[in-house]
Length: 423
Ligand SMILES: *Cc1c(COP(=O)(O)O)cnc(C)c1O
Image (cartoon, rainbow, N blue to C red; front, side, top):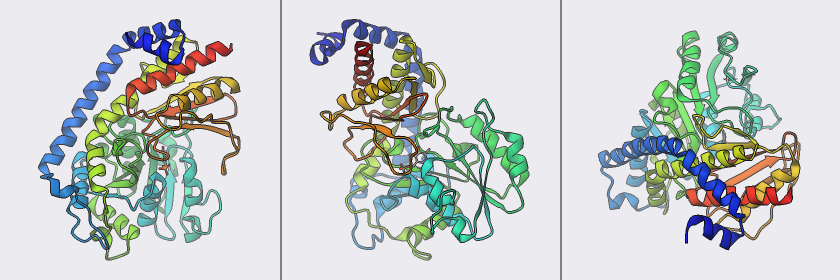
C-alpha cells in the first residue's frame, strides 16, 4: 500500500491526480529543502531561547486571580523577546486575537493630535473601525488621531517616494503589513520591510514603526524586528502558537513601547505584573516550541497546492517556487463553482467538521458573500488548514495553515479531483 493507493481507496481520488501529486512533490523537493533549512534554523533559535531562560516544569503551572509572580508568563515574555531579538515582549491570553494586539499597539502609542500612516496600502479589514475608516465611537479618529495611507505601486511594491512625502511633522507611528491578508498581492520579504523602515526613519527616526506580523512568523530566518521595526504584533492562533495555543496574542519590541502596551492592556501602573495565565502556560510555551515545525508543514502544504494547481493551468500567488513571507496561498479560479468546490474540499479533508458543507454567506462587514472552510481543533485557528474566498471576480481562494503536511496534500488533491470531475 502506498500514498497514492490509500488516497484512491479511501477518498476515491482519481489515480491520475494522485500520480500528478507525486510528480509535483518530486519536482518541488528543492523548495521543500529550503523550507526545512529555515525551519531548522528557527528551531534552534527557539530551543536555545528556552534553555537560556531556564525553562523547567514549574514554568508550565499557571496562576489565578491577579496572576502576580507568574513565572511561566514571565519566562515566555523573555523567550519571545529573545527569539524576536527585542528588548521586551508581552504574550498574553488576555489579548484575544491579532486584531486586539494591533489595536493595543495603536492605542498605547498614539495620543490626540498624533497621526498614524499606513505605508503598505489599506490595512487588514478589521483595522477599519479601529482607525475610523468606518465609523465607530471608540475609533482612533474619535480620540483625535488622524490617519493617512500610502498605497502600493501598480506592481504591488511599496511606494518609497510616496512614503517619504506623506510622513509629516505630526506622524507619530507608521504601520507595515507583512502578509498579503486577503489581497491578491505579494507579502513583503524581510529585506523589503527593512527598506521601508529605513525610508521612514530617514525622514524622522523618532517615528514608531510597527509591523503587523500576522502569518509571517518563522517563514524566514529573520523577523521585522531584525531590520529595525520598533514593534511587532500577531496572533497565537496563527504561526507562533504552533497549533497548540488555545487563544492569545503577542507584542514584541522596544521596552518602553511594550510597557505602554502592557499599561493599556491592564491598567496604568499594573502593566505586565498582572494577568493570570490560568492553565495556559504549557500550551503557549510548547506551542512556541512547535511553531517553526508547524509553519514549515503549512508552507510545504501551500507549495504543494500551488504546484498542483499550476499543473492544472491555474494562476497562483505566490507561485510554487517563489520566495514566501507568509503562509497564505492564493489560487485564482476565475469561476465561482470552482472556488466553492475547492473550499468544500478543504472542509471535507479537515479533521474536525469534515461532514459540513460550507456555502457562501453574507458576512457582516463584507461587500460580497464569502465562502469559508475551517475544520480546526481550535475555533478559527488559521495556523490550521483553512480556506476562504469572496464570491467575486476573479474568484480567488485564500488557503492557509495546516498542522500536518499530509493533510494539506489530501485537501489539495481532493479539490483538484472534484474540480476536474465537474468539468
Ligand atoms: C489575521 C490577521 C489580522 C487579524 O487577526 P485576528 O486574529 O483575526 O483578529 C490582522 N492582520 C493580518 C495581516 C492578519 O492576517
